[in-house]
Length: 118
Length: 118
Image (cartoon, rainbow over all chains, first blue to last red; front, side):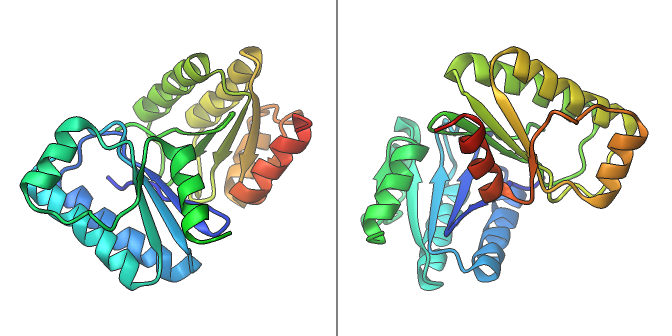
C-alpha cells in the first residue's frame, strides 16, 4: 500500500487517511523524497487530520521525513494534528518546533505560500 | 484500502496511483459521494495518470461515479487518461463525451475553474 502524493504547481500535497503501518510509513518516506527530487517541489503539505494516534516508530519516521525534506530544500507544513498525535510527538521529544503547522489543507497551503514568500 | 480524497476550497482532488480492484473502486464511489454531500464541493478532479489500464468493471464504476457526482451538482474533470484506458472506455461505450478532460492535475483545476466560471 502506498500513500498517493499529489503535485500541484510547486507543491506536493499528501493526505494520510488511515493509520500508518511501519512498512507504509517507510515507503512513504522513500516515495516523498523521490518525488521532491523528480518534481523540484518547493513546498509540501502533509495533512494528518484522519490520523487519530501514532506510535513511536511512525512519529520518528514523520520527524525524519520533515528533516530530510528540509535538507532537500523543500519546506514542510503539517496540518490537522490531532490531540493524541500532538501528545505522542511531544512525549517522544520529536522536535517539530521549527515546523509550521496549520489547521487544515487550505490553511497549510496559505502558510506555505507565506513561508515561501510567493 | 481506501483512496484518499483531498478537499481544497470548493474542490475535491483525487489521484489514483495504483490499479483499482473492484472492492476499492466501489468503496471509492461511496466515499466520494459521501464527501460531496459532506463538503458541498462544486468540482472534482480525478487524476488517472498512474493508471495504465482498467477492466470493464472499473470502467463502468468510473462512468457511474462521474454521472452520480454530476447528479449531486458537482462537476467532474478527468485528467491523465492513458492510451490503454482511453481505448477501454471507448470500446466499452462508456459515454465520457460530456466529461471535460485535461492532461494533468493543474490543467484539470484550471478547466474546472473555467467550467464553473470562477
